Image (cartoon, rainbow, N blue to C red; front, side):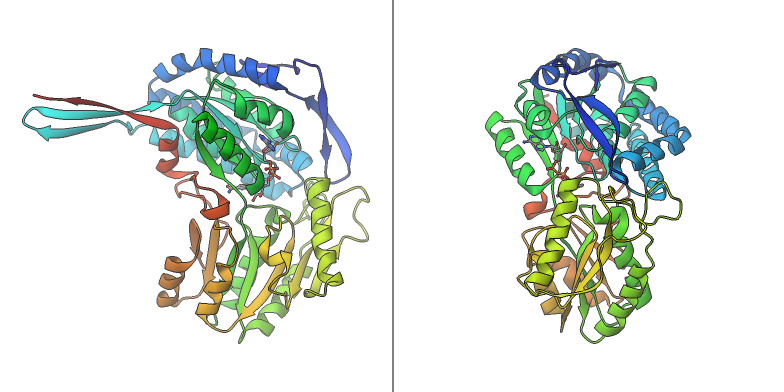
Amino acid sequence: MRINGSEVAAAGGATIAVMNPANGEQIVTIPRGTAEDIGKASDAAATAFPGWKAVRMRDRGRVLFAAAQEGRRQVADLARLLTTEQGKPLREATDEIRGFCNVLEYYASLSAQPLDQFIDLGAGSGAVVRQDPLGTVGAIIPWNMPALIMAWKTAPALLAGNAVILKPSSTAPLTVLRLAGILEKSGLPPGTLNVVTGTGGEAGEALLHDPGIAALSFTGSSATGEHVCEVASRAGVMVNLELGGSDPMVVMPDADIDAAVRGAVHGRFYNAGQVCSAVKRLFVHETIADEFQQKLAAAVREVRVGNGLDPEARMGPLNNPAGYDRIRELVSEVSTKEEGTVLTGGEAVGHLPENGLFFMPTIVTDVAPDSRLLSEEVFGPVLPVATFKDLDAAIRMANSTQYGLGASVWTHDTRVISRYYAEVHAGVVWVNRHVSVPPEIPFGGTGKSGSGRENGSLALLHYTKPKTLYYGP
Ligand code: NAD
């Protein structure tokens, strides 16, 4: 872990093994942080905060920019490390490291525009509204996109002048630790960004309850998010929640079928389906369903599964045994309960390493409306497909879960687009694309998918509080 600018062991000396999901081998061990380590990180952050707050925003932006440049120089090494701990193919890991750099550069670019406002109220009176940093931000992130989500939280929080304690997932902490080191070498003062490794139950819980925390920013499952929200509201701490999703993709009869098939394959099987805003439910108009499903199955059979370090691999293993077991269980339930037809996919067989967490890209058609594939978040490479008769039915089906992260519609009909945009429950609506999240565009959900927004200038405001000076003539 990194506290106050140095790599340190856990106070209690305990460690956790980080495994390579492609072969089940241990990569290294990392410190298993406890409340004592969170306390040290909190002290370091409190000491660093006033100095960092006093740095001009433009100079804080310069640090982010320098770290992005260094990240680009080290992209090949960082991507290898990310693939080894997380499982994703090197090409996707490279994209993610570049994504980290893009986000840092985006926030660096905002540093030239001060957030403070002057309001002239006439007759000699007016107001100044200053956007002050909050203090220490506790950021908790998952394992599916650790580098990107680290950037989504730390870049705006640091640019706004806060100190940060980051708690990565115990199954993908290594790239995050390296990136924190790069930020420090690029000029971030010691203690401004601390990374405490460990489990959710120990280090995570301690961070939620640390009295030095002014705000919490959490990305992870909806179940953990509800708990984080409860703890934060009891403590009166500001909270930003980015949670699970079950995004619908609706394909209308006028859609470009080949483009939609490509979009579904990318949207569902990128990162082995372990993306919050992946295409998790596919609804196709009944008049094009046969052609669509045939083309989809053919495209999915072409997806080469293997160790992410193999340049030929298009899909890697799942990241952790719990996620793998859940996917196996959900797919076997489809067969035992006769809830659908497995068109292609299922458990991995043949050339793949026995101890790797490989699951083949799977398409399930004729899915029963009450199947868990349609009501729960499926965080892996399984795509349930159902058909619909008209737009009313498609929107009803799209809105049939409690999630509301992303949603896409594939059509060129502007009336359909405007109705879908107005009526679908989602924080982001894509047209003829899915799972694209550039740093300029606010990203987040509604309902069980959370309440906050990452990215864009809005996210910067999450990490500030306005303070007004109102004067008379
Ligand atoms: P998770 O909720 O199990 O864990 C997320 C993080 O919370 C980890 O660092 C974990 O150690 C920590 N944690 C767990 N229990 C905790 C506790 N009691 N107190 C404090 N911290 C605790 O989620 P996961 O399995 O790591 O991630 C997958 C989930 O994340 C999926 O549901 C996915 O959709 C969601 N996700 C959402 C977004 C988004 O932007 N909305 C992005 C990526 C992932």
